[in-house]
Image (cartoon, rainbow, N blue to C red; front, side, top):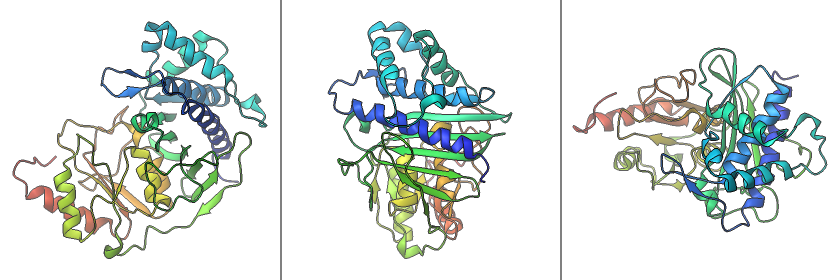
Length: 356
């Protein structure tokens, strides 16, 4: 039996149930969007998904900690929004699965408390911490495009398990595209336990479907076979330097354009892509751990390697952000050193870029 087998089953079922909730919302024109303090869009789906995920995990693993993107502060200020979230949470069920291990919040106050277990969570190196992004890619979710529901288990700050639900991902994704969505099924779910490979299964509205091992493929890519995944609408990255990196490598840029950070890891794993680079504009910019934990593990389990642009291991044990790391290089293990060298050369040639 694999380690963390119970954790994997509960996590997959919890993500699958949350996927039902988000898919139901896709048919609603007004998804309850509002603006958070950081001006990113958030919907009732973010709050409701976080409540459902933490409710299932906290029941089964009551000593574990949580780090989630959302807090319940806005819900307490907006009674109408709170009512909509509560209705979604209590009315979302798996069709034919035994939900005794996936309880719902017992009351409205309990729901707020569960959401805040994630929002107030600080992470760190002690014990076990579940990291979750209820909807990664909220902007594309609102448009009915690709988005992800992310869960990762950290043990003493290290990734041990990752689950990514992709409700709009077709059963045979090929090259992943924002607008090519699953209209016949319920999307796909990727998962991995450290050292035990990465798997994919179709999502359902009930019990888990069988999982298929994803063959290791990212450790034997040739330079001429580099395929990039990028986000060309980001304001935090230096896209001109990204282009320069791939021009030097002879690779087409921008390649597959995806908004969601987690969907990029999905593309690296099964979507025909194999390299993603992030050169950030400011040293003060630090990525949130829920945008990367779990996704990196899944990519590594098919032969990928992930470091920052200094070649440092990604440290998820320092709180809610990857505060010890600067930028990102995700690449096939056999090409990572070569690509990292080019990234560092491109940065060094730019006088306005201060080496981190």
